[in-house]
Amino acid sequence: MSQSYVIVGDGIAGASAAETLREEEPDADITIITDEGEPLYNRILIKEFAKGKLPEAPISIHEESWYDDRDVDLVLNTLITDIDPEGHTVTAHDGTEFDYDKLLLAIGGTPTQLPVENSDADGIHHFWTFQDARDIKDHIEQADNSVVIGAGLLGIDLAAITAAQDVEGKYLMRGKAWWRYALSQDGAEIIHNALRERNVEPVFDSGVDHFEVDDDGHVTTAVDPNDDHYDADFVGIAIGLNFNTEIIDGTGIDYDNGIHTDEYMRTNHEDIFAAGDITEFHDLILGERAQNGAWGSAKEQGTIAAKNMVEYGSEEFRWVSSYSITHFDFPFLSFGHPTLGDDHVEAKYSDTEWRRLAIKDGKIVGGVLIGDLSPQTKYKKLMREQVDVSGQKEVLVKQDFELDDLEGAAAEQ
Image (tube, rainbow, N blue to C red; front, side):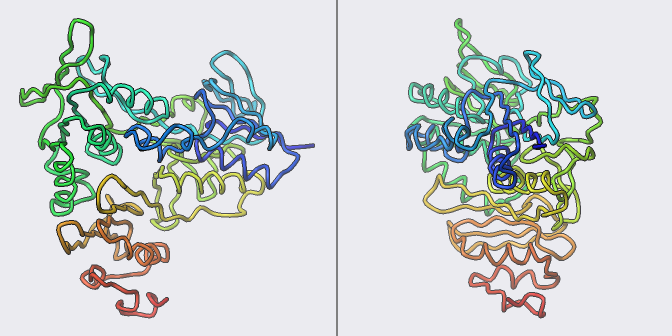
């Protein structure tokens, strides 16, 4: 009798799981359920579309025929609202029930709302889905001035979109530096200067107290806690994700900020797995629970989850993720967990070249490279193999660093 697999979520984690399941079990029943109205698209490229750099066509990854060709049942515009682990069913918003033998939750998150007056006004945007990108592009092309809130990796995408559309912008940041948990002032200033060159002005120690609107309910002004006023007929907000854990309340599935899984992507229910943004997985490299929804990580998690849904314990998730930014004249890449660690080392080599490594218990756990990305493979190798680099911090940030520079056979290639 063929197995029945249900996947909730058609992002890269869910889609890669479906593809792997079909390869592993040609006769299985596979269903993907998503609350979005279109099949898988490239979340990395939607920012280029919103910037006006790409047409819609390259953004889409799967046409509906992709699912038909693989005998995968794709159910669009359907929100799962209940899970019954004992009965092995999930229920949709319209009451439709789906039976499963094995279930994968790749349910991601929803942009966090800014809890201030008029934050739901016309002209205020969050940036997560392809439809968000379409709405942003339509609006920004008509805007005169903008405000962006959220000094992280999604916030800078919004700032770059306003810059690409030649809209004067203010980028409000709570601290004194962009992504201040991963970058020092030296590293962040490279980003600040690049923004200024594109007519986006960073505003530090700021934020939003409330928004002002016109008689039609359209945003006109962002007012910060210092009572400074910033004209804005376009506002972009990216202050994080609320992970979609509400549907697992009362199910007995373990979760905190995300769903707990082991290194095989299985939850505490033997027939329920999770992948992507939503997971707090056992990170074999860190030796503790971690969360990372970068595209490559989510794709690999979906693949690993599928293999273990077919045969539990067949392959573990062991991954060093990376995230790149391509908005500027210089490259930018973060890897691993650059905001963690009990120590760090950094170096600046020029006005557009800088790097920083996060270290925990003498081992690299993440880093950020600006300008020259060539050392990334070496750093990832050291992190993946958990090489002890204690006492050799300055060696790690030599501009022409090679693995052979490190003392000890453990670091040899």
